[in-house]
Image (cartoon, rainbow, N blue to C red):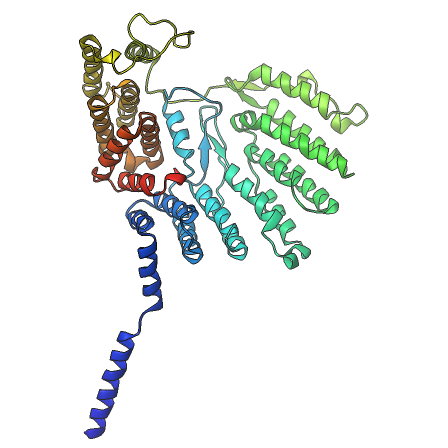
Length: 499
């Protein structure tokens, strides 16, 4: 019995000693919270939002110059990489060209993808930041990046797959991600070879050619890799939407690559012959009515014949008219317009009247200036503005119109109202309405990136209105009750260099 008491007493003493011994991890966490209280506010909020927003916030906290804790930054990047793998969209998509007004859903979705919240972009961003801290870890992460399958597009598709973030990272990893021993064993060449073997879309050709042009491989290795790129050219999907949108970049990068090869004494015959067959296959196939048509075909013919063709080699022969004649002409891109021309013209006129005053001249005419707040203080302007805002409040779905169309129309009108509102109470009224429709839209569950594009559009317009409007906007976001909006407000306040 006495022995049992001694054992029990020793056990109690040991438990108390262990209980008093500090946990190193808990102590490190406590110190970090003390050192970086604002950054931890962002991190805590990041755990309550969908994965793509979590990953984005953690990446920004890891990359901000104020974060000097190397180990914590590594932890954040690894966590962001894992969250990024759960993002709903596999890769970025963009609409070709540039537009000054958002009149269609495709443009809004493209703006959402520009936030780089898809799986491939998020994981690429995490690896790029890790390259600055721990190249071994970065290389291990890069090998685990979730590679998407590029889509084969129809003419009605307005959004084109975009892999720029990944291919830019691939070039960095090839150049500096491998230790000397692995480079001697050719691991960097194997990496490039694997990526070439995965190419299936025209939108990848120019990006891969650019990687090879700037690579550090030997002449023999470059010749081998270019040969594999030639095979990839033969195997890419022949869809005109991808081909036409990527043509300019592809041609320029392939031309740059052949120039590099000639400088290094490497034969270009195989890649140019493969490129010629690729051009003919795509130009003679079905074409989209809005993809450039005969004008693009003529450009392809003239540039290839001038820069790459050879009269002495039948495989490199100049293109002829029969080589570029399409087998069929099909439809055009569906921009999913939510504002028709009549409505846009009417709202645009009202907007200009509020911005410049009634009887104004052309928007860009010499001497044309926006009205000052003092000039907007009259009853006539205020009545006109109140009427404009009232019609936005009364905006209802049209027959057969989806919720997202109504949401975008209302957001676009509020964006216009914000740009003309007087500082103070008028701006605040618009901002309150703006945040109200953002937080009430079902689109945040149905298509988070599309909804977030409107959030970022609102934030951009508010910033242009000055610090007072920005303060009101952040306050409304913080009290919105929507986790993503709260995180957006915290990131804006505590990570100003990352927004």
